[in-house]
Length: 284
Length: 284
Image 1 (cartoon, each protein chain N blue to C red):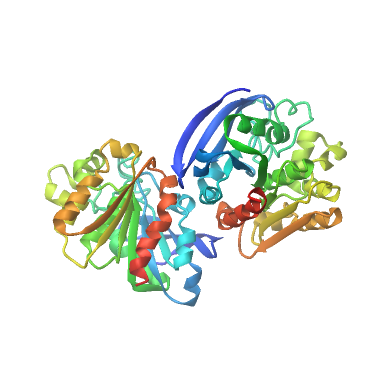
Image 2: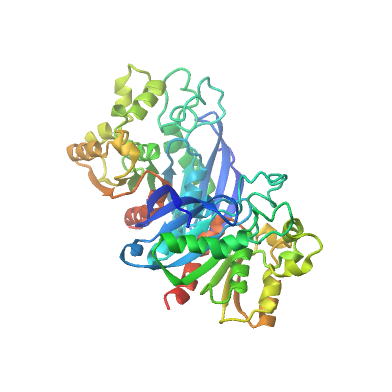
């Protein structure tokens, strides 16, 4: 197990918001991730909640703007918020778009030649990072949940749907629900997985995965702002996820929130209720 | 009354976080300020809380990182968060330091030739801005409180101490308490007020003002992190304020918070209790 290095440590809501860096084997680069350590961690192992951020974000956006620490401190959850993509891999074109390459790893394992060595965020999130967390923090190894925003909401959904039982619960804010049918997803999947390989695309699409889900009961909890520009642009397609969940027998609660947009203001407003959702399963 | 222009408007915690710009007469430039409009404002006038930010900040830092909106929505307070200084005045040297000029107005009225036309943040905060708010929002005109952080904590203290009765309550996070005796304050007061004019310095020093305060009872509420680097560097000097308040008969509660630093993580942790403090007076 490669070691982790503490980059910063700040007291907040009785716990500690830290940032660590480590050399990731999956990604072949140095990665940063935020960890909120709740006060309850001093007296024993605690559950873990993973947060996956959206396009253009680093590990910083969530920890500075989501107001999550107060809720994590209340329930005693360790909250892990990784960066959204490999950085500094010197791949031609990685810095050309805000919605592809750096800051836009899409939480999938690339198969295209140029990207396949580094752009393995799916394996990083579901395998390497949990191992790093288990090795370095006192956690209840069977109690993990996952949530995210936008591209990270997509990430949370596919990680939960593809790994039945690994996450006790999943929730998302304004997730990209059906990437194979929206411009962001088509661009990313074309680049990382190839234009022709549509079967591989389906393996990373929350709607396709929900339709064929089989595993322990999973209750998906989603908040979506009605005034979110990306909703009206057809990037998010939450109705498609509701339909797919019905077809696959997956429970879903989708709340359409009047007047709210795609920002961290929206996220912070409902963050407490997402922690309540995860607590139902992690504290059971 | 010059008009104000809405620059942005985002729903959060049931209210609206807006940013406005206007042409300030006191400052001779365009100024931005944040306004959180709580849901209660729909049914009648509400109290106002002013927030003054610290060195290098604009109107954005507080509204994105302090987690204030949840508390303002709970109590029904309009929260006004102005920028910290004039900008773009083309004064020679205004961009040379992070702790003087742009981003460092120090909430005083400059008297030195170079700065006196624009650097009038004290009059802006205590006179022009309240008039702008009263003209454009439905507020209870006799119910205002003020708080701030660091340089803005100093600003909140002097605004309250110099204008007995104008603010029902005052609180501060890690305020600069005794600027005439700390490096930041000496630099700013020398630049804006002149090296020789020490009587003018005292008119903007919270300790000097507390010693001679006479007005309605004022209970100052201060939180200070014990691991704040600027505390150990002698920039903040909260003990001097406690001594001055004792001499002047001003009530003060100073809470020294173990392990906390100077950041918005610290501020967000105790923001709810500062709103509780102001509510004691604004909802009385």
